[in-house]
Image (cartoon, rainbow, N blue to C red; front, side, top):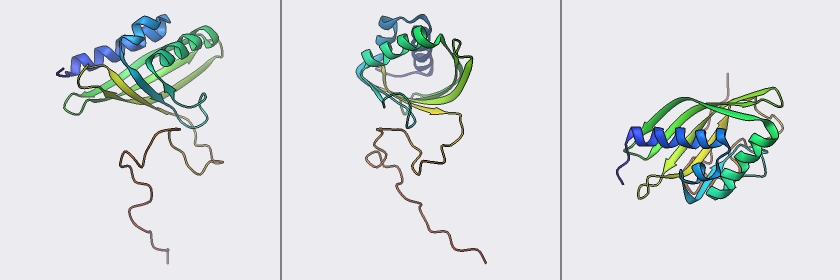
Length: 155
């Protein structure tokens, strides 16, 4: 399938509509079956693995938290099969607002979402020495595992 900016944005918006409507089937139509949703450490019980798990977890959030999400901005790059969005999550039963970004990876054959990486706009947890997505294979994906150079001392 040839990905387009419009297709990618519309699929993300359909996914969010499914979240807001607590519509499992609508969300499932947006993902490859083995889709994965990654989160910062300590969020939930780790990554949501599988389209069905992703959909059911958001239905639960609607029921327990009164969750309502908005898609605030979208940038899509069909050439690489990636998109990034800014979103807002209103937890109406708790009176909380959470903001963040998500990176989307699209499956080139089906045009569906393969992966989401969530990044939250919140203070760093200074008790942690490693602040990254739980369960995400940074090394295997070629991310740097150490600084690219050593910083000299100050005089």
